[in-house]
Length: 229
Image (cartoon, rainbow, N blue to C red; front, side, top):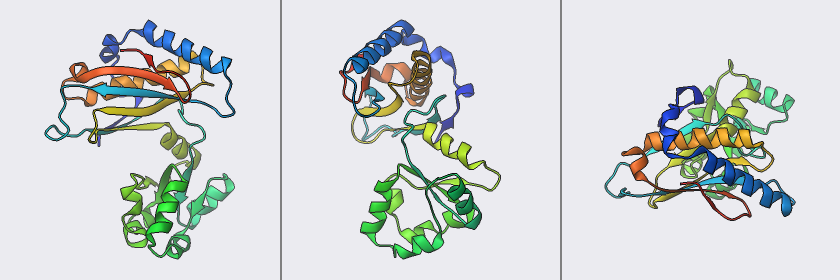
């Protein structure tokens, strides 16, 4: 699965997307959101329509990219850790589970499914990651939440932020995709930067690049879609 950071993206791929259109869409979304304040922080989603793509025949792409700013600050990450990692997680108020906690689930499909639904993502210590299929069965993998690896050299808070900042583009059966690229409490500059990186990366995954892009919309959780391409 390709994975990129901001530095490795070529800004020239953004050329088909008019910067002013994107900025105007951001301003409209922010204005609408401010006029009708919700009791929660609205997420901004990038909605992508594809064309000239046959999911049955063409290779289904999958790739992840780290955005400059965390798009969903409320996203929860759970550490499946060894003793050292669990100790660090507890100090940092990060949810964690050790081997004994995982054994208690007893490979029960319902309990594993409940665990997968409780958190947005997981990180696991090297000692545990190899044991997860044996301890939990295929449940996390089926939910698309198989843990990423965390080592003892990693700073846990940074690693959690990295997971929170990363978005995944994956073509399944439908020719439309949606990923969170930000929220309404960001500045226009921050949201624009996230959209820029997300669009560039998506286009780099497509077989014919921009020729495969039918439409791009931006939408807040409760707002109207804003067309940007």
